[in-house]
Image 1 (cartoon, rainbow, N blue to C red):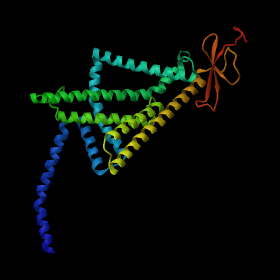
Image 2 (cartoon, rainbow, N blue to C red; image 1 turned 60 degrees about the vertical axis):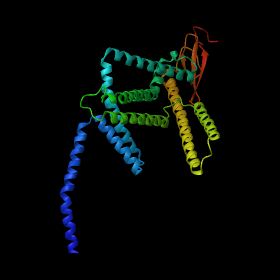
Image 3 (spheres, helix red, strand yellow; image 1 turned 90 degrees about the horizontal axis):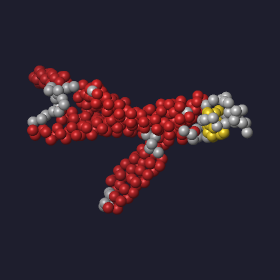
Image 4 (tube, helix red, strand yellow; image 1 turned 45 degrees about the horizontal axis):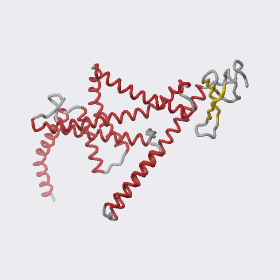
Length: 338
C-alpha cells in the first residue's frame, strides 16, 4: 500500500509542473485573445459560448436566454451606434434619418387618427388631445416595428458585406471598413449576421407574446393557418407517406405553430381592446365636457364638433369599451332648443 502511494506521488510530481505550465500558457493565450478583440467581439463570443452550453447541457432557463441575447444585443448596439452618430453628424446622413423618422411619424399619426375615428365615429381633428393620447398608446408598437425593420435592414447589409468579403478574399482583401488591427473579420461578420437574425426573431416572438403585433388580427391569422393547411395538403399529395416517427414530429411542429399563432392572435386582440378602453376613458374623462352651451341629457358628456353638432358620450358598462358615442344636433338658446 505504501509502495502504491509513493508511485502515485512520484507520478503526480512528474506531471505537476508540465500541467501547470500548460494551463498557464492556455491562460496567457486566452488573455491575449481576449485583449486583442473589441467589445462587440467579446459580446458575440460570450453569447456564442452560452449558446453552445445551452445546446450541449440542454439548459432551459428564461434568465439564461435573456442574458445570452442581452450580450448579442449589446454587441450589435456597440457597433451600430458609432456608425449612426457618424451618419447623423453628416448633412446628407441627417437628412436621410429625418426623412425616415418623418415617414414613421406620418404612419403613426395616421394610425392614431384611425383609432380615434373607430371609437368615436367622427374625425380625430375634433379631438386633438385624444389624438395625441392615441399616438402615445401606439408608441410601443411602432417602436418594435421600427426596431425589427432596422434589424432586418442590418441583416441585409451584413449579408452584402459578407458576399463582398468572400468575393474579394482571393485578391488579398481581408477586411473592409475596419481599423488595421481588427482581427477575425470573417468569423465576426458571420456571428454578427447570426445574432442579428436571432435578436430579430426573439423580438418578434416577444412582440407577439405581449400583443404588440396588433395588426396580426384574427382574419390574418385564420388566413395564414388556412394557407399553411393548404400547403401541407399539397405537399402530402406530392410526397411519399411519412413514417410514424416523422408524422409524430411533423404533427407536433404543426401544433406548436398553430398554438403560437393563436396565442399571438388572442393577445393582439386583448392589447387592441386595452388600447381602445384606455382611449375611450381618456376621451370621456378629459376631452369631453360635462357642461356645454348645447343641451344634453343629464349624466352624459359632450364634445362640440361645430356650431350645429355635438358628440354625445354615454357610459354603457355592458359595452366592450364602456361608452357609446352619438352625433346629435346642438340645441342651444342661440340656435333653438327644438
